[in-house]
Length: 95
Image (cartoon, rainbow, N blue to C red):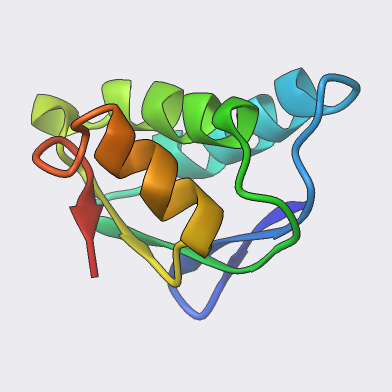
């Protein structure tokens, strides 16, 4: 589930092949309503830090101003390893 809480985009549950498009669209709708950036994306409640979940996050990032309008916090350990293996640390703002 993707929702806007406490001025953050909060991702909970899991992102899989069955719901990835729905999760992407839900996040995109929130991002398009934003007046100021960066927007913090809280991944505390994300159940599984898969490559598919990371792909959705990167797609959200691409629609933000200067492709740098999102800051990610509480990134799951598995996703951090994927980010490091793909050398995406410079592109994704991790807090």
